[in-house]
Amino acid sequence: MRFTIIVGLVLAVAIPTVSGAQDFSTNRGLEMQFTTVAGTVTDEQGQPMAGVKVEIREASVDASAVPNPEDFGAWGVEAVPNETISDPTRDREIFGWGETDAKGRYEITGVRRPGAYILIIRKMEAYWRVDAPIAVAGSVGPSFKADLVVRLLVGAAPPTSVSVQGLVALAREAEQSGDLETAMAKVEEVAVIAPDSAIPRFHLARLAVADGDSERALSEIKKSTEIDPQCGDCWLLEAEIERSLGQSSEAMQSAVRAVDLLPESDDAVGLRGLLLYEAQQYGEALECLEKSIELGSTDANVFLFRANCYVAGRRFEDAVAAYEEFLEKFPNAPNRAQVEQILATLKGPG
Image (cartoon, rainbow, N blue to C red; front, side, top):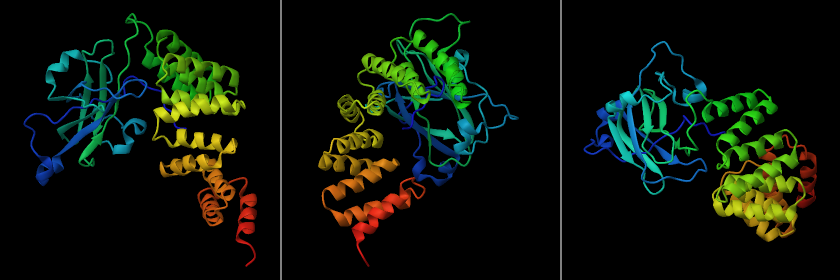
């Protein structure tokens, strides 16, 4: 599974086309000078937020700054904003704005490249203000993707207190260095600051899994799904933990919830397929495993169990093709010799 600790500052706001904006797609000269900043606005649970006003202004730029590959390297950044916190005194310099649609999508046309900018979401009741710095390189094409996340305002913390963003950053740094104890301690602090958010409980469960503490992991992930029953990633992780503990029935129920909430997730659909296979429901399992692969699964077991389902259904030609695809995609699989033996048997002499 692919999970990322949510960081408060890296957010992006969507705005429709600015009124009176020129049609850059039909003017090659302008198209070479400008790009469109586009993305989605979601809450901490990944739900799209409609009707959110997005604003953009230029940022101060440190000409001697070195681009941060982690944040901007994917775009070949030539200029890096040196602003990472709110500066309300400069809000008057906003040059574009708009609102997200029903799916939380926005776009801002006419953004000059290269350039450094701040995307802003403000005046949202019960949510923190967002100030997201972006750096648009000259090599950027017709669009620049910037997805934003807004966080619930959970009580007013004193200015001198440690911020949620700071704690999350420390947790991520500790996890990347292998210090799971410190990472968990910092996320626990976040859980205290934001008791009504499922996100810190989700990450505590994930870290507990990495630390080998299945009992703690199950306890934390159950808290997350209790707090937010609509958190698909939470149900998916709960299903994985329950499966690892041999709780097949509970894992299946959690997997079904995950698929209901994340119907296009190859991880969720694939896990349900694996559980159905283990329950010897090969027909239903095959449907899920095939769909998971169509959605882009990279899980070796999804490919292997799909081939096994073909064998169970006596679809031997399909099984041969599936096993060969498994060996091609996962040449270093520890069970390679066993799969090759199965293939030889299916193909027969000759």
